[in-house]
Length: 172
Ligand SMILES: Nc1ncnc2c1ncn2[C@@H]1O[C@H](COP(=O)(O)OP(=O)(O)OP(=O)(O)O)[C@@H](O)[C@H]1O
Ligand SMILES: [Mg+2]
Image 1: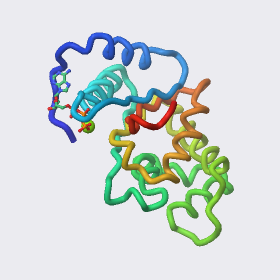
Image 2: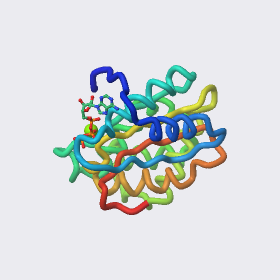
Image 3: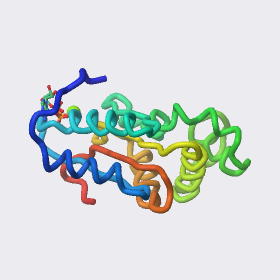
Image 4: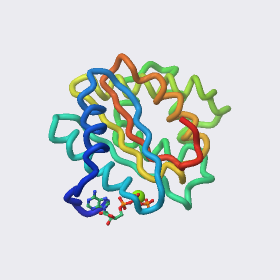
């Protein structure tokens, strides 16, 4: 966890982050930029603003040593929410059991997993809006990037937001 940074400057970025948080609908925001330019500081800033505004905030970060482990990143992101899996319908529960290794079986498609994730997010944001903050997304495993990408494109209409740092060379 980074130390508390008192933000200096970055008025444009702070304004865009404030608009992202204030938007009535769910959406995804991607941060890209050169090493050391302040991406983690901005993500910490938006996480604090969101918590102050009453959001539930879940934070995660890609880990280089886990970048070849399928679904390790997704597990880290969803870990604080997984207690609610028991309340999902059995089809979606089975999807999580498979990808997180609680039962055998063929991994689900990106779409089946993405829909199960959206169901879990919907349940987890029923009483207050939810912000997922994912730093160092350049280290996320490919399976997690695919699942988070699907999820991020389907957030409109709900109360869930995603702020994600990605590698500069990934489009979108
Ligand atoms: N706007 C700011 N005001 C004050 N300090 C800042 C600001 N932006 C960044 N810093 C400081 O600069 C340093 C580098 O910033 P940070 O770690 O956020 O960069 P980064 O883009 O996440 O780097 P990396 O690419 O290595 O992950 C940190 O010590 C951070 O606290
Ligand atoms: Mg950083």
